[in-house]
Image 1 (cartoon, one colour):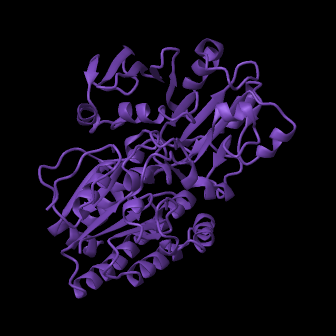
Image 2 (cartoon, helix red, strand yellow):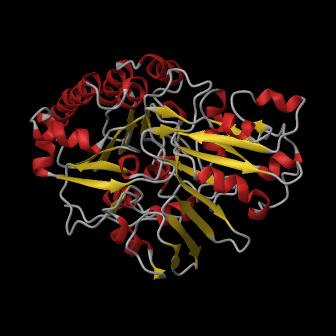
Length: 467
């Protein structure tokens, strides 16, 4: 029976992994690569834990699944009733329990096809038999331990549970490893302590590989090792809440959501990974009115002049996406059968792309080697969510958008459209024919094909030809 083991090395940087492989510091990973493959893949926007898992487990972009970030506001529901359970969300805290319910109901996860799978320290468990969520009761404790102290205990427990869970009837194993991501936020993402966690992963990987070989099931098992996002070190924090308050805005934000008991708001800030943010704006304290550029033009122009803000995007009255940076301005329009891109005043991404109609694969190929791989497609997908902000911000390197109530204070961040956040390593123990430019959303289709499952949903991405 064929099996898939998915090892999600949350927050792993492809450049650090490259260095460690080249210095022979990860012998077990190298042995897998020698007979398999090592590529880079483009993740999604926001490049942050949770939303960036959706491509792996559902074959969808997070915007399609109505999951635009780890914090969001639903303007329509908020306008009807700010106390509604569907009005706003932060998955950093007790509201994390709503994550599965908040994903668009029409999409199936791989667990719907294989309910007898195994899930370890993973939040997307829709369709999974409850008893196979092996960390259902312990994940909160160990994630908090990892978040506040950078503990590597969570990864040791994950591997132990993974090996102990094997039996002949289970085909899919999804194991999340949070140590690198958590310690990166605390220390910075390129310290020696961080590199030791990569090496710890390699040791555990060797034990797993030996176990599979001893059971004579290695050759029939597809091992996938990848990440949901990268990291970059953070030197400066531009707190968007304080900024909007300085513009005489009343701001709704986490964790002080109780203020809605006695206060009206004309704006909201929802940050993800700390290097991307949604800003929600209303007109005359009415959240149900559509966003108007003319009413907020001064604010937008001031935001784009800030050193912290790299890319700012919004939808105009025609539904087109306008992209701004200090370098230029462009327009993105979804034409269903194709994507229209038009630089209006130079190119905000510094792309060498002319005005015209493109498909998704063309845009990936044209932008893959730039500082903003696949940014056009990624902005299109996030704006498909009705929970998306009126303004969507992506931070400049070295900056993030949250300082208050962030403990421990981030020394490394992610979430943006930048290459260092959105490009991730992708390692398989199988080779890939005619290696294309890869997105993480391609992995889902590849797994289903390997396991002989036909999807009941229209899914994003292509199938990788593995052998």
